[in-house]
Image (cartoon, rainbow, N blue to C red):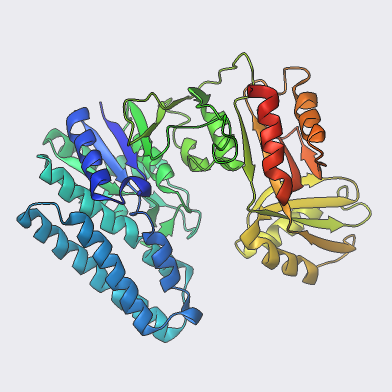
Length: 454
């Protein structure tokens, strides 16, 4: 049976981490398939290179030099022949990247397709590095870019969805023969290829989703997500010192926590796994002996019910006001269609008779606000943008079945002197979420955590 191991960028940023990755893969598994993110910080560098209005040819050359230096330095401890082969592969990739970036600079345009191509280079380079480290550890490996592995998606350039049936068929044809020969496949995360051959992205941290797609396609016995943290916690330990590690979660609990702000796993990771019942292990590369968090397909209600308190500061709210906006047919559909046309996703909607509140990522808020201002029509009378807000979510199987939990949570917030701006308790079965002022979110999280865990 195959095990799919995904390594995040924070696991690839030092030579010591890379040695740990190689040792873990080579010594710990019989039939491993590896999926990798970009080396930590590389995607951000690439993002800067396509900000056409703020970059020059000199800065592009400097960025390429920095990217080359980072990867070359990571390869320095390896034997001369292995290192030389990897250097050559990396330099070929960077020559191509340099030409693409200069083309963007001179035309002054970055299409969504071209942006996706540029941002995919981090993963393309990291597979070369991991392959070299595995070879240095005594196992032959083969680096697969997503197009070579056969990861086929729809045509969305920023939030693509994989065609699981086609991808599974192609993955098996490419990967199983290599495994039989004793080779370790190393596959790029984060991106796929549309049916017409265009590069598409799964969104930031989308390599978790990639790994789940590979696990689905190969009928893996398990998916292991290796991070630089011990697993999911009862709260962000940077905010709550008393936060505890969570031993077990369901797919749905983990997905809700990820969606609402616990950025351990990409929220879409569990989509490809649902019909396969593949367990997911979240583990710490630097403490592999620790149990981590195990995520199972089936829900499991704990004695305390509440598993974790998550929060998200990167949101804004657009309020759409008018008599009957929440009642009149077609208003929400019209608003959703308009925002969708401009690539803006609505995270959540809270409605009343006279107001529709849209929760958006902060980066889309101004654009969405301007679009809706220009498009106001009956029955919409006014549009407002709220920026100084944050979302708090309480997650756990059985939350809606256990009496008194919501009252305890909201009492904890009130006792900290915090006002709840708006709330939703009906949409997700295993979560309550509510909105507070951004500067009060940490106090709210600490107060709720104290109520349920301390």
